[in-house]
Length: 104
Image (cartoon, rainbow, N blue to C red; front, side, top):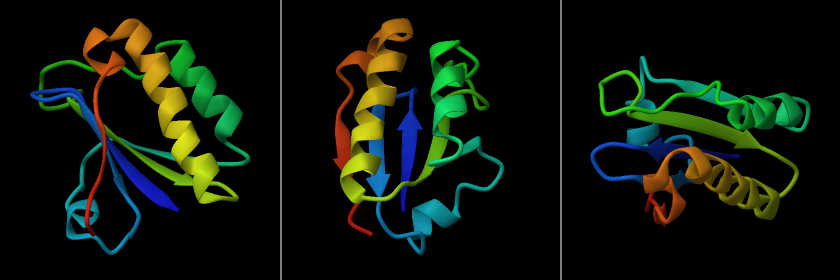
């Protein structure tokens, strides 16, 4: 499982955390969190495609977390690229936002 912080403002980026014990992952209380599993993958992607997840430069919509639990790490990381491509079509800053790995 990986946890991914999608940050829109002030600096657009995707940060992958591969340890759920990471202190930053634990500090995300009261943030938007989307759970992604093999069962929820289709509906989650549909929500992103349909624009159901909004991003803005405010304290509520400036970030989101994805908890991704798929069968392999490669699939989990590939999903991050797919979400980035979907979001990049609506939110220009996401189009070339870096994908970083946090040293948990």
